Image 1 (cartoon, rainbow, N blue to C red):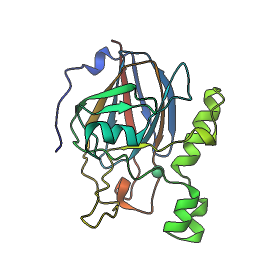
Image 2 (image 1 turned 90 degrees about the vertical axis):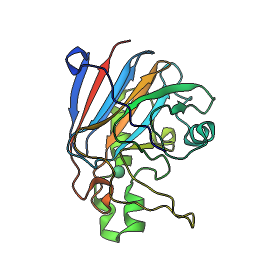
Image 3 (image 1 turned 180 degrees about the horizontal axis):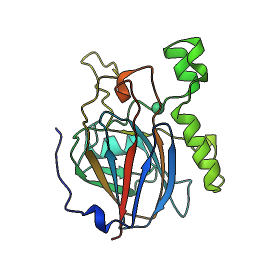
Image 4 (image 1 turned 180 degrees about the vertical axis):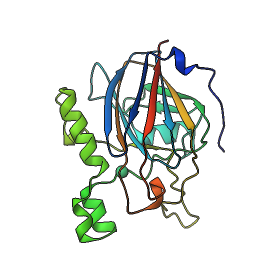
Length: 214
Ligand SMILES: [Zn+2]
């Protein structure tokens, strides 16, 4: 079940307000108590996201722990985003989309090649954006630090037979998801450039990011 909850926060009060273009990334620390909003500006845009504890990046978002704790596979308002040490990194506190995926993973040159065609290998992918942003962050994080991510706004239903399907989106222009950092957290985002399946409505578009202080 999804839980649509609007936020009372005013964008004019945000301490950070930026737009990430389609295919670009963002790596930014959040202090405990700060709130991050991701706005799907044009609709049906997948936002691949990973989280790390800021003081010890060996502790990071854990998709299995998160799904186990809530007894459900889709993420929405009330979902606690757990670390691999069982701590709450963030909590989703508002959501006007209603469903976010954490099963489908991030696109890569390898998956583009295996799923679609040999010549898709050279298309830009989320994995490359993650690696580029990690390198830019100067925190010493590399390939081995890429775990299983969240895909905000992405619709990946599990069929009755147990298969995953990359389905047409359930989001729309202006929908957003908002989360509060429970501990100091590093956020790593790839605004997905995928063109080979409908996760971005065949048209990757920008997202807006806002941060409010506690
Ligand atoms: Zn992607």
